[in-house]
Image (cartoon, rainbow, N blue to C red; front, side, top):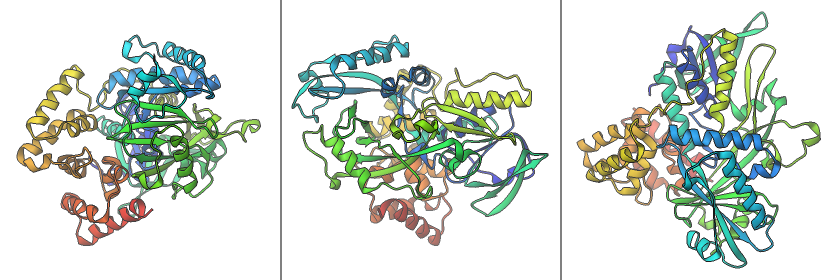
Length: 529
């Protein structure tokens, strides 16, 4: 993946996409596969905001059944099945446990009916994707960290998991390979119009502060939370903040869906890179978009919710990492505008302004491919192009074409021969898919690259160097937050940060001044809470 902002100058495109999160990435990939001349610009890093601050799930949304949003659940479950097939390296099955306690809000029968409906809507005949019931002893064997007081049993059901930032990056790489011009750290300054219709833009290269002019027949904004800052899209948006905490490992290879005893909200405990991802909150957000923080009240809420179920309660001192994101919901009708963010629909809508610019409002990672296909259908209709969506049955750019279990087994065996530990090899293959072969070649030349960057976490030095060299990375936190999520998976000290930064400095073409600048940037954004 190479960045070439200057190549945009004075070009004319069929489609300009502003915003490099999950919706922008899918739209660029889909449009490029259909043969459109595409440019996508992102003012920061790919997946730099909400698209790297999710719960890392590809799921139908079991809790949406309570609000009778069957259309959204059905749509999401269909996408879940499709993505599991098209990207087995990127999206993998994850079972969730739902305990049944005495005097809880939903009883065993209600949960049984909901899970039966969930399985029915999924239309997935595979036995491992169906829900199951366990008695208290059996359920505790699956989830030994849970308190057994008043436990009557529990269910497990299937959904799926991903690494959200890697998902976006792979789609951007696929779009670029299909001919799209993909440029991060490139900001839209203003739109250009002719006779009241948008037909171009002035953009600025954030790395050189150079202004450029481009032309585009169609323009789409997939800028997420920033839609709420400017007309006309701000009238269509409602913002909610969600936070997550990284906690010590208390799970094996299954997650938990739980209900907060204080307000009945659903939250998750999810195994992620060997730790426990705890979240999320849902609170209205009206603050500074550039400074979305995890507040003490957010932490208190999540810890209290989790400790209502744990044998050994968590304390603030147990928090390993944290992150916050702002989600965009469709602005509900005025009669519902005072409702809790938790009850607002996660469905999506495409709005078109009078100047012809399109705005993607709302949505969720799971259904973003289908929504992006609708965006590109709309763009193609405006351009008079009859070209169907190509992403529905296409394998992901880094997905192996052969039978996945056989490929995975062969590649893991090769990783073991190269000295990569089993856990690091598993995550390396999930993170890079077929490109892992290139990383293996670097280890063949230097066996020391097979060692972990930090002993407790399953990331090897070869992965770090590959990301620094090949994945359009410009800042240290691009590398250590989104390419590899070290900054949220460990309490990374400045003493640990320094040698990591020095190791990649040559690959990133940093002199001493830039090196210290990047370390300070990481310290300010991620270490100095």
